[in-house]
Length: 183
Image (cartoon, rainbow, N blue to C red; front, side, top):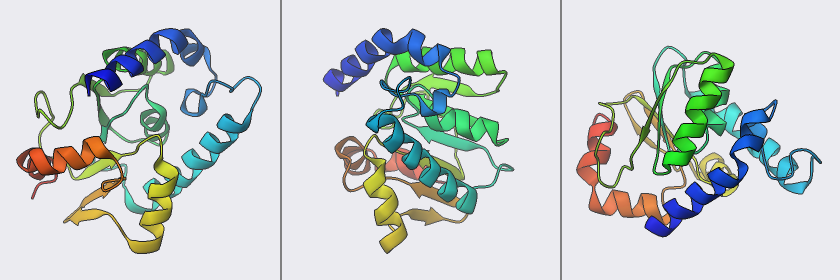
């Protein structure tokens, strides 16, 4: 996991100014300026994610954004009136999302942590969002076979079985997940 954290910290350092200066940080990609292939794919994913969020989440209940990165979904949520807490293992990404929220006048709480060790996690949450960079397949899987974990008002949209760190968290820290999901 340390290698992944180092990768994202390095990535964040390299692209921080580009992300912060982007007029649509929720759509930022390395080819944002040219609106290249990666940008077009990301825009499609974000649109699909927003449809699911709108269908299953309510702005009345706070959202926990696990693996919030530099804030792609957090910014979209804030623009739509959601209150949220975001977590990520990259302190550079957490710094970027905090700066973006300050710049755009959004409110949110961001914590550098992971769900595997369970440290510094917020209390029980009724709406939890967990997307990965490969979220396109999770959206298709969710829509086709209902692969989400629901408990009362809890909705966890994720790539649970295809994303190794989250699968590891489910296997090694089920009590942390149960606490977050109000089980």
